[in-house]
Length: 349
Image 1 (spheres, rainbow, N blue to C red):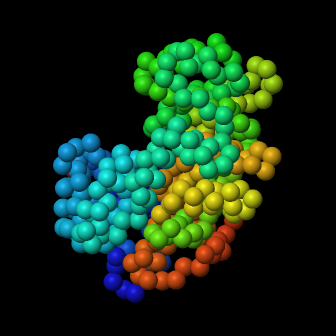
Image 2 (image 1 turned 30 degrees about the horizontal axis):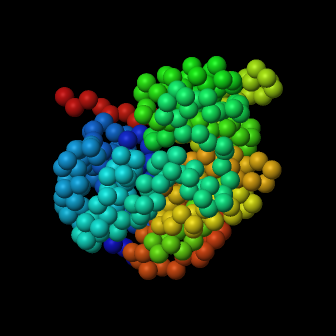
């Protein structure tokens, strides 16, 4: 085909999911005319697209109407949200957006609601027989006394991307110190058992079509001890082990890891996934202990595309262009390294 497909990607600020989606679509052989959107003109991703627009924040009452107007103005055929606030907002108006003839490859609102709340996610895993770290929801100081296994990770139930406002507590005194601090900020949070070690953490992407059929999966064995990918690391006072939390900048070995991916595919199908989800886990004794599910495209979308696993392009080709996509299609395996790059904008005088 020679006619370009008009695609809008929102939330394209530097380093986020929107920028990753732009990079992935740029790597595709399918011809795309990319329109980037963000709420500030100084967003790096805006300078990687063919056209750029400014949208209000997702919290603005006029956000959806402004989004639809942009879609009409640019004859948008496919829309991808690149930030979690927009994902949550747009999920509530999927029918209205699709009524405009726009392809919106997004999970059902029910899936997004479960996965954006870690307490609900753990309840889903428990109810369906999947593995997860022992988890306690904390709503008061008294709830902290219910935790009796250490070390543990304290994290917000909602939000907390990149391990923001997360702590590792090695004993009851540390748990109480960090827990009281978090109760001053959050009405509730969760405490999870610290499972496995720093060298057994994976992020697994599972891609389903918009009818719920499984397309493929891909995994990254994360190097979470490198400075660029680490949020927190501390030596255990009891075992000498290095305890660590990753941030949102993933790098490491990329490939099928079939023993892990097979477990995640079952989770995705049971969840009712449409489009993409990302499952964060520690792999211990042959079991995938899931501690988070992100109901969206990944912060690793671009380097998945580099190995031939281009999620946004695959869904457009299947559902807009009518191509047949081979389930479990082959892709390359190897190691992905990440760094920083810069973009200079000359002052307009």
